[in-house]
Length: 131
Image (cartoon, rainbow, N blue to C red; front, side, top):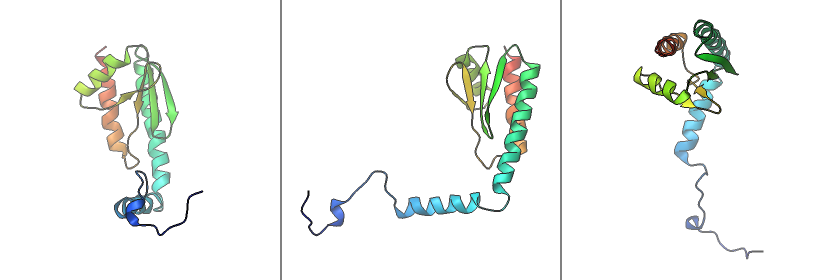
C-alpha cells in the first residue's frame, strides 16, 4: 500500500494517456465514421476492391496465387518473390508492405474512393505484367 498524499500534476504522467489534441482528433474521426452512409460506403468500396483484385488475379494467375482479406484490408498471396514485387510496386508509385508467407498487404484508408481503387488496380496489373 502507498500512503495517500496530495497529488501534484507533475507526479502523474503516461505515454498513452489522453491529451486535449488527441481527444479532439479522436472526436473528429468519430464524427466522420458515424456520418450516415460512411460505413456503408466503406463496405461498398471494399467489395469493389475485392472484385477488381480478383480480376487481376484471373488475368495474372501465374503471378497471383490468392486474394485474401475482408473489406479494405486485403492481401495478395504471390507465386513470385514478394520483395521483388514490392520493389516493382514502389517503382510504379504505389506503397504496400509484406505480410506473412509471400503476401503483399494492401490497406487503403477508409476514405478511399473507387477512382483510387481503379488507380491502384492499374498499378498492380502493370506490376504483374513486368514479371
